[in-house]
Amino acid sequence: MPTVEYRIEINRPLIEVFRMATDYDNLSDWQPDTTAVNMISADPIRPGTMLTIERRFMGRRTVVNVDIVDFQRNKLVEWRGAHGGFRYHRVTEFSSGGGSTVIVDKLNVNVGWIRFWYAPFVSAALKSQVSKEWENLKQRLESGAGMRG
Image 1 (cartoon, helix red, strand yellow):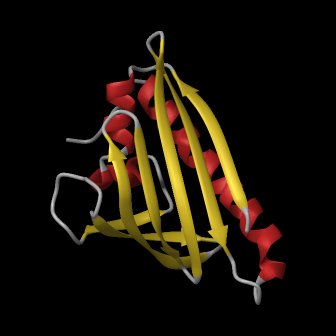
Image 2 (tube, one colour):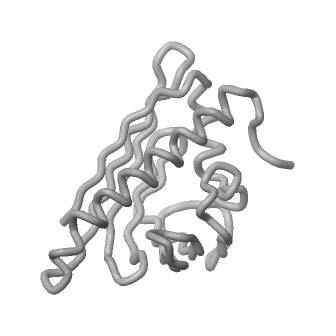
Image 3 (tube, helix red, strand yellow):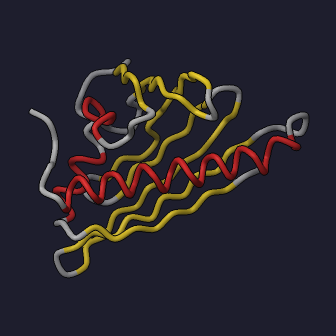
């Protein structure tokens, strides 16, 4: 099971970082591979919220089915779901430290025993995509660009 862990510090207050990271309507602002987000259950985001995210991954269009299993405002988001043919579990933790925010993002993907040879490719692609997305968020927030209307 490929596991990706990424840690980043963003020089912006926790509340601002968390708000942008969990504003799924504007996800494509900092995740360029995201093409659409569809809320299946109503706002506000909470455990039990379901959504689908259409995105490009490894050169293909995929739909990510997301079930929010834990949501602690300004602290944690936990997802379970399916990305293409792969089941996954993701936990993103947010903490504050002297005016900046530390994010630790852990993603576990189950590629199944039949696809075990995919694991190194999936892991490398996930690491690249996850780091690119968090770096995009950092750049956007630290430059003052923030969220769209």
